[in-house]
Structures are given as structure tokens and as C-alpha cells.
Length: 503
Image 1: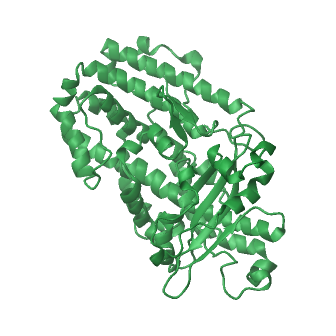
Image 2: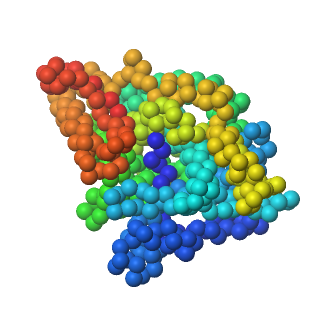
Image 3: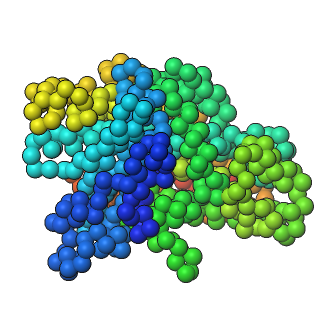
């Protein structure tokens, strides 16, 4: 449900180290050491690989991945802990890529920064054979899931697909006439964005609203979102290929094609099909309306729109903005905006209830500290309550019943398609159908989306793709276009009304 945080551990990332100030937060070197990793992956490395250092082999062969919520969460830990009935850690979670192409979690590091009255606390948890270690591992995973769920909602969803899209919408309505071809291209993807964002500010992300009441990091949620925007958001990194390359999830080959680090990474596999389809449609569209690069440069409405997006909508971001001076840059800008508002949003929005409706899958908040951190420990250096009733400790760590009841209807509503939903590849402007070349380009777009749907169906039925197929495995359909009965489909070129294609 949040495929946008996982990243490759590169050789430059190891040993793992924090970039935060040690004087303020405590030692920054991670406790996830080479020795600890080797202990965990010993049984899954080949005999040939064991001849060298396991960790070196794993990094070189791109088999180590991480969810890194350490530096972003650590500055908020003490402030969040001042709130009632909640807690927070900074976390790092390490995964090993198995021969089957699946990710196996091998270590979780939880950290509480130092304060004037307490030293830094941190501990690494791993899967284990003893019952005690297994319970601690389950609790550590609960904390990480709460971190991932909060980051997903506040950054992957709200910040990147709602908040940062607003300037595109406002500037388009201020600077582009409704007859402008770029306005007509973008307008379907801006449908209801401002209305939804206004409702979110009134009910979801408002002070003491649902997000602050039931998600980590509580009343500091918008502060966290703003911090991520300040440190990490760049327009040119919102393009799907650029995002995958930045996280080490893909490399660009000499021919310009992307090679995925994880062969079956459904969000990337399926998303790149959608991305390329959008880009081809946008390229055909731009080439039709702008014969020369100078036409783009001299379009005062277009340049005024893009200038306002940068200088008024995102004035604090000076880097990462392409100049609209040729067909390539305009196509990249428009494809990025359309992708974020369609495929990216679909991937992080419409799976919320199916994946997170069962709260142990995706707890939104953690309410209790790890037993090994608490004072007044019993035998084995842990709370007596944990030793006597670990189930109760786990349930108390999960969100409360009230928080669950508060969140579930919202997730259900957000995951639902409205009766008036417009589908990509289905919405068509009258001006496009009146123009033979644009109509033909749109028809090709429609056909590609139908073909993509078939490809994704085949992938989801492939038993070799362990992330999609098998007992209890949910097929990845968040980026699967859907449409009516093919028997009822008539050529877009003939009817001018394409079938519905939803992402």
C-alpha cells in the first residue's frame, strides 16, 4: 500500500549512519552491523557467496533493502511522547531479497533520542526461535507498520498527490484559458482536487481531526509532512522513473531503458507500463499542437502557468524545475503531473481499505513502548506484564477501539470510486474528437490501456511471481486498468466514446 519508501542499501550507505547531530540526538551509527546481518542471512546465502563476507556480497548483489524512518522521525519522538496514550520511535528496517524475489525482513532498529534527563535508547530486534524473541519481533513490526502507515498517509498520499498538486491546478485556472490545449489535457486529472483537499483540511488533517487523533505522529502530523516537503520534495523526482532510480529500485541502462533491482516489484512493473502509455499519448498531443520548439517558448499562457507554479505555488523550491523550452521538457512535465494525479494516486489511495481494513495489517499508531525500554522490568529485563501476558501488551500497542472505528469508515470512503468517476482513457474532449490526428492518438492510448490490463492480468496469474500469486497472496490490481465487456466495445474512432479505463 506504500510502495514509495522501500530503497536499496548501496555500498555508500553501509555502514548505516544517521545524518543528524549527535550532540542533540545521540550516537548516529546504526546497531544493524555487518555481524548482525551475516548472522541473519547465513542460511540463505549460497556456498559460493559464503566464501566472501556475506554483507559485502549482499550489498554488491543488491540484495539488501531498507525502510528508513530514522532521521525523519527522530526529531519528533519526544514531542509525540508528550501526548496521551501514544508513543514513537525512529526506525530502520532491513530486508533481504531472497532467491524467489521476495523481501524477507531480517532486522528492525528502534531508537529513542537522548534528552536532558535520559540517555539515548536503541535496540535491534530480529526474527528468532525463542518465544520471547518472537513476541518482541512482533511488537517491533507493529511499531514499524505504524511508522509506514503514517508516512504513507501524510507523505506518499496527502503531500505528494494532493497538496503538491494544488499549485498546478490553481495556476492552470489563473493562467490558461479553458480553450488552451494544455488546459484541456490536464483538466480531467484536476477534477475535484481542490474540493477534496478542502474537505480534507476540514475533517482529516485539521487540528484534533482524524489524522491527528489516530495516526502517528499525532498532532505533529502536518509538521512531519512539511518537514519531508522541505527536505525531500523535488518536482523532477516525482516522475516514476526518476523516483525509482533515486531509491535504487531501478538503474538506467545505456539504451535509456530501466532495469528494476527487484524483478517483480508490482508498483514499478505495472506503473512503468502506465507511465510509458501516458508519455506516448502526451508526446503525440504536444507534437500536434506545437510544431516547433519556438512555439512552446513563445506560448505566453503556457509559460505564465509554469512560471506561477514555480514562483507562486512552490516558491521555496529553487531546484528540480525543467525549463519549458522544447517538446521533450514539456512532455516530461505534463507526464509527471498526470502520473502523480492518476497512477501514483491510485496506487496509494484505492488499496487503503482492502489492505488496511484489518488493523493488525496496518496499525495507524502505536500506543505502548517496547517492553525492553520500560523501567521496572521483571525477569529477563522486561516488564512483568509482558512476561505474563504478551497478548495484552500487543493489543494495547495497537490502536484503540475508538481509533479503529474512527479510521475504518474513512479508509473505506477513500478507497471507493464515486458513481461519477471519470476514467483515464475514457474522458475525451470534443475538440480531440473533431481533430483527426488527436482522435487517432487518443485511440492508440485507449488500445494501449486495454493491452496493459491484459498484461497485468497475466502477471498476476504467473505462479513464478511470488509477490502476486500464491495462497493468501493478494494480486496487485491498484494499477490495473478496468473496462467493460470487450464484446460491447466499439472503436473509439468510429463512436467517439471510448470504454472506461480506470486506474
